[in-house]
Amino acid sequence: GKWSRNSRSPDHLADNHMPSIRFRLNGAPTEVDADPDRPLLTVLRGKLGLAGPHFGCGSGECGACRVLVGDHAVTACDTPLWSIADKEVTTLEGLGNEANPHPLQRAFIAEQAIQCGYCVSGILMSAAALLRQNPKPTEQEVRTALDRNLCRCGSQGRMLRAIMRAVDEMAAS
Image 1 (spheres, rainbow, N blue to C red):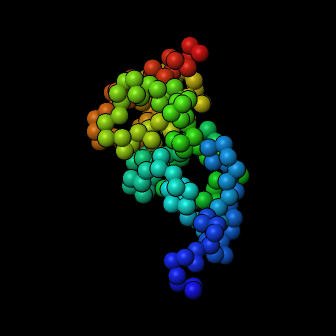
Image 2: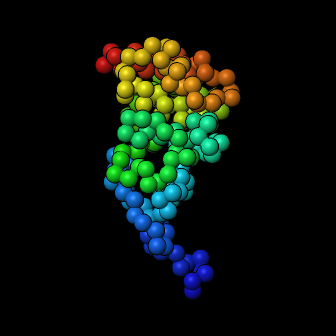
């Protein structure tokens, strides 16, 4: 019946009577039926099952949920779904993978720049946005780009070294 657990639509991405929002997610065409005012983060984590962007503060202050929309890092917790229609969204899962990691991911591993890991996805996405816009940033430009990302573990020094290492690697290739 209507209230049965098994009565779920085969299309698990559909909300009844909701408009369809189309966008590209990590390079793949994606379409979800959801409230257009719903935060992008809840769609990415809930409907699409991604684990890269984290829920931190829920108000766009901590940066744990940052993703790329085009070449810009945005906080997915306060970005409405309607605003990404027909745009490219990149999450940590689309930055690189185990077989072919992004230079930032390689550098974070090499510099042991991850402690608890909660903020790292957002920091990597902020750094990736910076490097897309400015492939050879100064250390101060990196600090400024990461200013809105909170890390409570004290790993900022290692993260900064890792990002500068990735800058050098990318410049050499």
